[in-house]
Length: 638
Image (tube, rainbow, N blue to C red):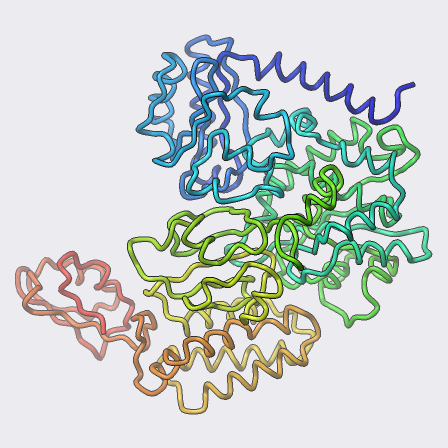
């Protein structure tokens, strides 16, 4: 009887034969990005249109499949055409009408339609073959080297996202083609649990959920616990505003998370794993369910997995969207069926977690890195990054930046390289003002910090944090006091309410910020905010509460002049805070078109057609609708 590795390789060979017969040997192969973001941009209609065109022309040698998110959220939906007669081309911002043009030109006539393709900077590999794409999954930049935008993908290194946008997430055979489950079989047949733990320690992999604790050390602690019942949990409860790294990873490559959990379960002695994922991620849940079912059917989950004597299975638990359940002890209570509220530590979950049993909790990105560590070796993994922060980090790059989307860069890459290199700089020629890292509990860093390396220690020293990977770029038109108010409003609303410092402290801080942004700030408010922030950081029960004042503290540190302008001059320098604005009409520019009057909800604008209009300041609610409606710059905002 063949051993488990031989069985896996045989299964992979059969998978390759099927894929070549059904997909890859086709004259033309088309893939459509079908993650949540692409679906929202119209991918389902695009996919349906391509299906109709294939049927209409009776094409038997054209195949169509879905892939995950490529990361270019600003260019979605993305359609890629592979042809035996041309190099691959990625078409962006597709609609059913545009797809029909691409189909007529590229698919039927083998003439790529460059006008609809990815813009200048595209790398087209003239020696491209399907074999080159699939040959070596360790080439984590193969996606960009084959057909990526050199300005965006060329500056990245895709490790967590290595298969996203490349494989069909609903076809396990495609995962097998990129060394899928080979790491799990290697671990189960060639390594002891201690070997696995030591390998992960040697790699330097740190938890990507925000704290940055050594993954191997955490696993080692759980392994040492003398208990036959242990659990391993994947934290997919992604709740930061503007963050979608975990969702996109699961939607684009669910099997890599499953494989990481299998390896982690074996390493610590857990035979049951849970994926805790928020219910707001229906597509991620669907693809995870499909992947788990396919793995069970193949014998990769369940009893005697991969033909060994090791049992391991995974269950999904849905979260109701509580931000605090991203904290591991609150997450544990939620899985147990209790209200998601944190508890003091120690004991840590690795000693006493789910139902009092040893439990390891890692996030999606951490598990996705495990197969890479095992197959490519800890030395190779640790050669990427910095002395203390190894590997790569995925960021959801959002805000006022040209190239929004998912980016993955080696640790140690500077914020400047991310914002201006990968991100392409600030939109509309505006000036950079700040970048907020670490989610709502992170800090806002000004231009003078752009050369800060993206690693755990450097970001913490700068007054921010790595967090799970949210990165929001802020331009000159934003008010930093209002930014701080926005994030504090989120964390205050999401506070579980268990401990007084977080429950009451964030509420008092928010009240002060609301006073300041409405023009009622007084001397001493800044000092009160700093005192409250320090108290909350020192006395809150969990890490979320302890970090909640960070946006306020960092904006006071770097943008104190804006706070002072709000308080002393009753003026918002960025012209954002409605309570400090005055709208008036410039007589020399007003032509009496009435656009402002029609938009005013009060109404407080008077004036006859073709005559100068006037705003009644006593009735004006400062909504700004008049300012937005005027096409002649006749409404002044001050």
